[in-house]
Image 1 (cartoon, rainbow, N blue to C red):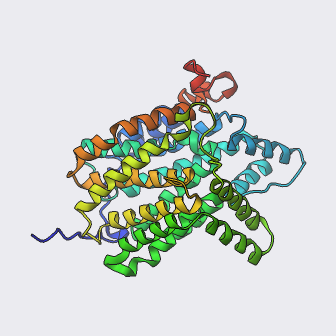
Image 2 (image 1 turned 120 degrees about the horizontal axis):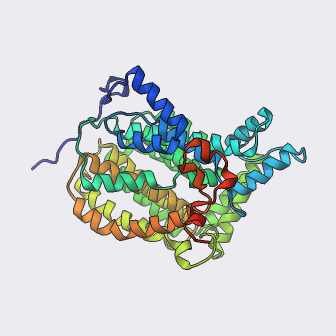
Image 3 (image 1 turned 60 degrees about the horizontal axis):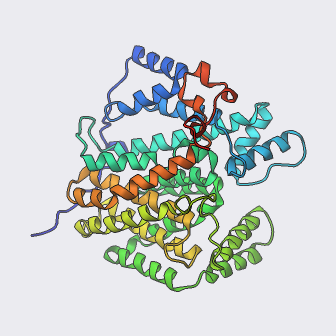
Length: 425
């Protein structure tokens, strides 16, 4: 029996838009709800999203959550807050990746406080995630009934690194930007995908390897049936070669380019790789119990195992965008070993691969049903463990006021964090 032939989706502009129009009155009511209570508007718009592709409430909630965000000492957001205050006091010029510096400069020159910097970062996050959602559902009819497995993995995908995490760390914000680049790549819009990837590098330089993986994926398409074998060959080379090779390449790049902010970033990440090669597993959490440092590992491996079982079912459908996404996952797995030589790879790169693996499962079960029981059986407990620990960490900086109406929540100093409200230190 011949395997099914995957019919590629039609060009983007030729597709039928599966959405319901909004009347002027309904639109005005939605805008009013967004202004009065962003969180409730987000809930309403998310629940109605499969029928009405409207996410203005979600985007507004993300901006509002950034406005009432509470940076924790020692975090990336706290460091940027101190940098912003020093810049406003005239002590030094702003330095760093172009995107956060541009946002911070805009806020500073406009005369607003640092909270508006976090609000704009939250707005950027909301727009990126809303665009990803529209791309993911653009070929799904509005009245389609989603399977239980699709709902589970869609929920896991969109709950991964929420606005509080992305506003706190530029790395997580850049991760979502690169997921958007991946969605554009799956849609066949490579030029836009590479442009968005460049924007992601400007948000956090640590995502450079993600951009490299996208470029390798683009250049390897001509291999056809050999593309997946090429990806595994790259993985094998990354596993065998010591991480000192990555350090040597970084050192050579700095010597060729000379000096500048770009070289400073390369040197910083080369030093990061050197510490990983020496056995200093930096970036493995913020201290505390072991599970706070290693909570990403079980879900990474469970998703990787189940994705291989599912890929075997569609391995001959090379025209399916999921085929390309799986190749990208293998290349990102190789990037983990390029940064560090220990089992599993570097933890921050592991977060990238995990996000792509959850996306792969969600997209797979949006249009397929086979293998659902096996995937849920393999991933149920690791997913539960991952999100319990993750939100235990992320809610330390989530202002409780973000969930209340604007007139109450707009005063963040009056509200504790979510974890403080729940009685956790």
